[in-house]
Length: 136
Image (cartoon, rainbow, N blue to C red; front, side):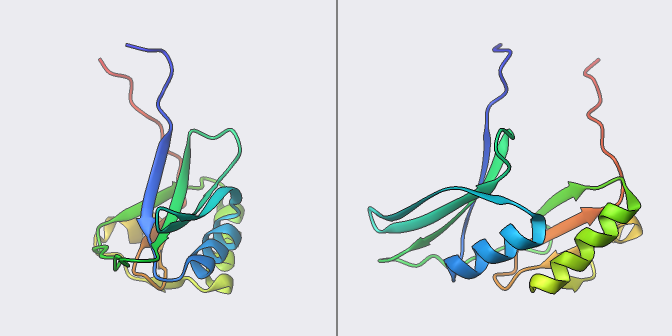
């Protein structure tokens, strides 16, 4: 197996590309990593942190719009162990237009807050650290 981890892209169709870009850029402090227009009928923007192993891609189809269909359990969870950083992140999410909602799974309400964007996609800001267990 390769020692290099694959890069993860989380791709989501959205109804208003500029609105989604602004929400995630400003709410989560992400950077625009790239974009494209009318690539075979699609417009898109990639958001993330330079050098990270993951990013979001938001797309809109010019010819055949795909309505977003997230469920209450389709989550992106970000772990923020520092309480002050977590509180500021929660405030920033609301300030830019994410709406706080109760989590479908009550586990996420114990130490986190769940936010939903206008397309129904949910982001959990969890006030905790996370560590991958070593296979054993």
